[in-house]
Amino acid sequence: MIRTLAVTHEGELLTDLPLQSITIADYAWIWADFASPTPEETLLLDTYFHFHPLAIEDCMHVLQRPKLDYYENVQFLVLHALNEVTLDAEEIDLFLNKSFLVSYHHQQKSEMDEAWEIVQGEIHSRKGWSGGPMAAAYTVMDKLVDKYFPSLYSLEDELADLESMGSTESVEELMSQVFNVRGRLLKLRRTIVPMRDLMYRIVNSQHVQSNGEERIYFGDIYDHLLKLTDMIEVDREMTADLRDSYISLNSNRMNSIMKTLTVITTVFMPLTLIAGIYGMNFRVMPELDWAYGYPVILLLMLGLGAGMFQWFRRSGWFK
Image 1 (cartoon, rainbow, N blue to C red):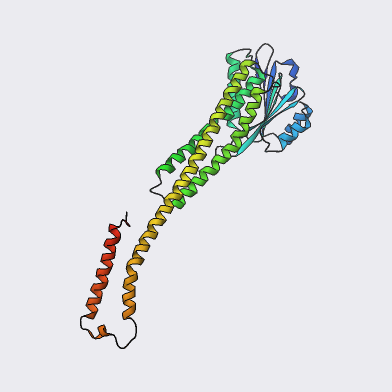
Image 2: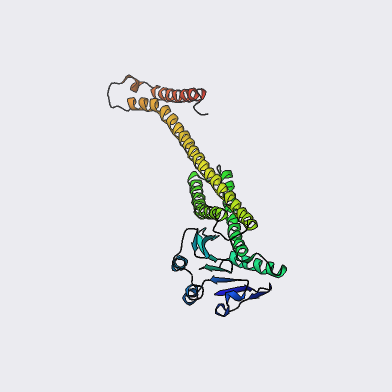
């Protein structure tokens, strides 16, 4: 599907014009959005706009790293949107110059719909909106970056829950959840850090056709991406701390179990020795013919076990 937005030289907004019927020179600027295009529609990137073959090839082969390329008077940008369910990156390509903005994406994205509505609203409310293609491109990027925050906030909430679950869940379950959150943070990092680097290049590039005010807006997006990367690094450190805490907790539990088993074994060692002595099959053992031998030996074993138990307790083995 291709939707179009055209602004006349008088500042009037026209929408949903067939792309082939538009002569770019007749308008102040246009925006053509290729959303889940068919192969025939994709061919218009070459036959209608005459974009560079390498840029068209990048559109066809996903997933490219976020980047900014220059082809004569056209800037080509590869951006990454975020799938809120899988946290996978989804590519959005922009072709930009003073006369047009062309956006190309293989999936329908709510961010693009929101940016489309905002640009139309700005043109309606301010006839002859001077923002043009660069401001429309900024709106797209701003919406893409805004969608990063909810996913990261959701992961931070999960981390907060994991911190409070340390005494109620098994260590194995907690470790599994920590590594799951850490893996999703890594997915976010793979999307956000390249976008941050791209935005830094846009803000500092002399080739991008923007004035000082527009650079301020792009700088604001860059600041948001810096905040996101800082949050991700803090969260990754938190997952590492939680992992280390759970490992320490598991070690302490194992030490406690081993201590208990050691005490039990130590108590029963002399009792086993006594039982072993009287379990031997020698014929001449003086105590065997003693009428009180059996109860005396039982009392000896009971007293010996109780005495050792008290001694261990006083020595602090059970603390």
